[in-house]
Image 1 (tube, rainbow, N blue to C red):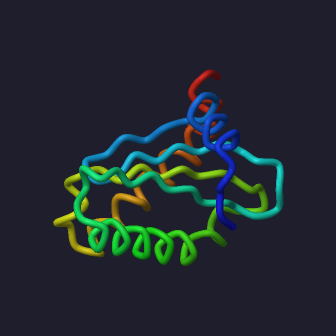
Image 2 (image 1 turned 90 degrees about the vertical axis):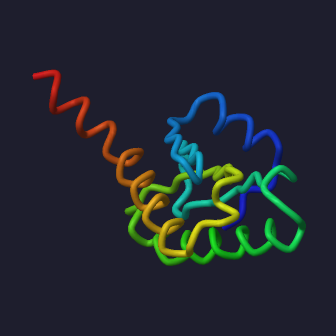
Length: 116
């Protein structure tokens, strides 16, 4: 359930949809698999190694709790953590991640409904 290949990261960045928030940027692209995969980018600007690893653990936990909500279609998600996330509470990360998933997974439905 992890995204590790740099080619996969590039494809998600280049062809996927994006949500940019205060704490996170989330890129989403359908992967054609049965399960979602998560990739993360946490820059050194975010903080020390301890802070970066803590944020990675939190994002993985949030992702695993919500991966079943993504439906039958698998997605590749790349989460880029912004420096403001270093001082954020777990609940703030959760709500921003949920907001990103809601906007990214409903974009196609809203667009197709608005064209008629």
